[in-house]
Amino acid sequence: MLDLHCHILPGLDDGAGSLEIALEMAAMAADSGVTHIFATPHCNTRNAQKNYRSDELIAAYRSLQAALDEAEIPVKILSGAEVLARGRFAEHLAAGDFMTLNGSRYLLVEFYFDEDPLSMEQALSEAAAAGLVPVVAHPERYFCVQNAPELAQRWAERGWVLQLNKESLLGGLGDRAFDTAALLLRRGAVSVIASDAHDFRWRTPHMGGLLEILERRFPEADPGLLLYETPLKIARDEAL
Image 1 (spheres, rainbow, N blue to C red):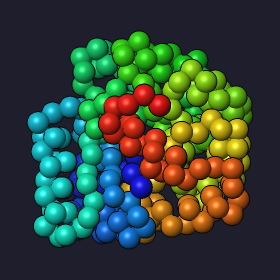
Image 2 (tube, helix red, strand yellow):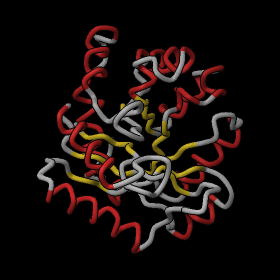
Image 3 (cartoon, rainbow, N blue to C red):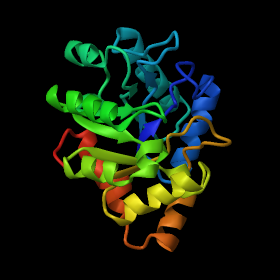
Image 4 (cartoon, one colour):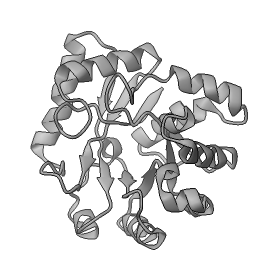
């Protein structure tokens, strides 16, 4: 499996707080069958660390990979960022400030949970106009999508990628997130499921529980497509 969305880079956001935690997370992921992790720190937030494209950020990916290799944890780190669509989003797009997923045309985009749908549509359209394919992080968590799931379904019909969080399907993010995720999954609108892991205790990168619930409650879903084939195509910058 390839985990498309994970906050494993230590010390860069509210994810792994140390290298030791990052190594624990990677080992847990590997134990569940994950071979590649897209390290996607929060980007373009109001916090001090904006995590725009930089030599320092690129060095952080390489440093974590070196530590994994030294610890003999069989996981490869791929670059990326979870970009919050706010502020001068379009200007940063034009300047190439955002780290896309493994240097591909695919950009992982998130929103405030209470963002209005028109602003979301505008930001996603701006990303597409810049030659990128938006990957919408956890659409099931946004209030407007919970109220009107057809919003996210229309995004999928436009060729934009919907990425569910595994914790939503496991029930860890509330009933509304579960119901919305289940509906989008059953309608075939979802392209990828990822961990969005922040630690190794509560929001973890372990995929075992996800595989079990997909088999038991969503037999129409294709885990191989959602967890391997699609993220692999994204990593290779291939069309979906």
